Length: 396
Ligand SMILES: C[S@@+](CC[C@H](N)C(=O)[O-])C[C@H]1O[C@@H](n2cnc3c(N)ncnc32)[C@H](O)[C@@H]1O
Ligand code: SF4
Image (cartoon, rainbow, N blue to C red):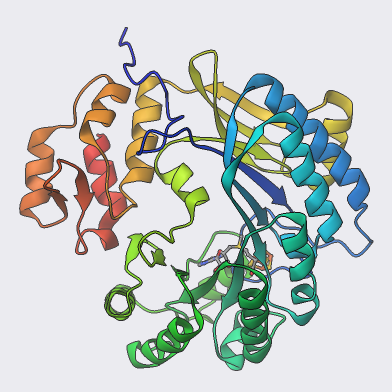
């Protein structure tokens, strides 16, 4: 039996201060985008937000009873489309979080928003409720491209929402999807430069992924959706890195770019292997209970989640202690997404064995990984496009 020496099991930030995140999932959208496989649902009847608030509060109470005494450093309202919630709903959930845990004085509270004009009218209400950062799903800055992605907003509407976010929040970010059908490096460079001119400190730039069982997957299978081949996708990725780095927004994670110091602290909680509670339909968590790191997941279907919480006080369908090997693999998988890489000593403490030096040497010779002067292991620019293979090799 291997003893884990890392007794905090992910409850500490790299700087040693406690890190604890709360993820809240709002599972509804106005329509389903044809590329998306997130846990998002369209409902034509009105959503009873008061009933959901009661269920969120109950699930928070049940979680806090298992992990008491934490100081919350980050909160993230993700979706789905959290900007469909009334500001009072967001405020009530934040109050419920504050009832059970201490809120750090520098807490980061992010809300994901769709950039339609209706949703932007709620931004000041979210700010008043305690949200201090928004992440907008802009996706593209061209109307024809937005239509092809099945989006409900125009490029101008998205830019107007960005301007409203800039006025209402000290921090905002927006998402773009690239490697879209027919996209050239030249067109993407122009779009990206436009985006950078609108961005303050943070951009999320995702390569279009064709997810199974989505309308895009069906179109592709029918030969009606031609996405960039590997070579073009690689050229678009390289363009992204060059343009963003030159503009002072280097990648700190494979798809996330920020001015140094402006990284999304909530997502860093995941990537650095720290502790977070997952609340709401289909939310995942990693919590430390009685010295064990546990993986939690809740019922995905919103109405089934509601009924489960109302009957049992929580919506959990998964609640498993992770083995040392699983914790270490997850640490590798998440940590190597980061430009800062991982601390091999922490891996060794979690896994009960060090990383295989021979494998590292081979990957280093191939130019896929490097060791920093302070001893961290990280994936190189050339290694990121083959990250999955690098992780699989090191974890083997
Ligand atoms: C949870 S989604 C939602 C945010 C919000 N509902 C919206 O659509 O604006 C977070 C982000 O994931 C990205 N995304 C979702 N599906 C994707 C896919 N198949 N390929 C690439 N990016 C995707 C989009 O950029 C999106 O903004
Ligand atoms: S991309 Fe956003 S708006 Fe579209 S279905 Fe997914 S979560 Fe909903």
